[in-house]
Length: 65
Image (spheres, one colour):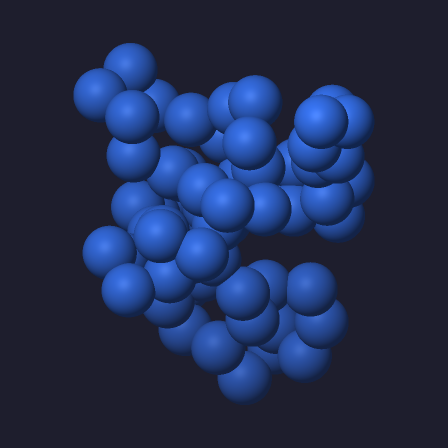
């Protein structure tokens, strides 16, 4: 059986935490920031944990993570 390949796009976007959860960055912080409040922009800086419904799929895409 050949080696499984990691999807490189996913590998760049997700990191594994110590407990095995996947960590991701939040969207909506690239442009059009003038209309967003400082509180919103501050909360978008923080990383989020991937929810369970998507984590199962991502763990198949990232076999060696």
